[in-house]
Length: 225
Image (cartoon, rainbow, N blue to C red; front, top):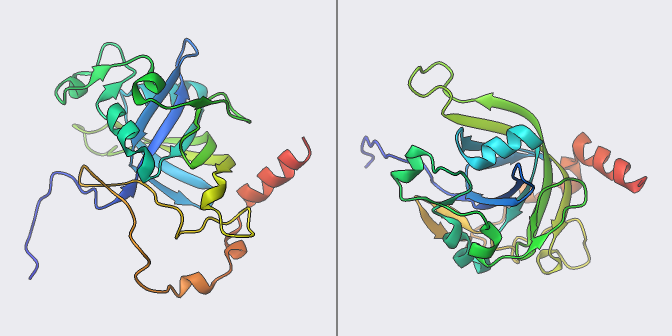
């Protein structure tokens, strides 16, 4: 039987992402988040307006979306209550966040340079996506109390780096879902995917039929360089 409920959060399960951006002084910022969804070679993320990552994205218009697997959960956890903002925003102080300048050192992760943008990749993450900001939108614009507190970014992916061990045998452009074990955030706790529970009718559709103009433009652009 269903009951009426008012949960404080509605995180039913989304992938964890380590967003790499550049600070004003060219140091690296690395922030874990899980408010994200993809459509083609674009995605939408949501961030607090006062976060350092938000400020960096507004200024540089670029970032790397590093997707950790279950193997990187300890590193993600070490970053969980840190911020690159100094002083620490009041809302984060209430949640016991602390300022940390060197996020890679704190997490025990390794920085890699990107190919197309000025933002850091994380070597240990099996998936790394270089992205640029296409649009910025506010959230809750019609609510006086909430307006301006959350920002959503539309990001366009322009280069994808995949660890070979998550690829399908014989394919360079297809991820094997039986090998890829993303880190999932569900109601503030870490989980991952289990085994396949049922074959999917959508799985009968060839992947290339989901190809987008964004992907075609990336292939054409960098094939010429």
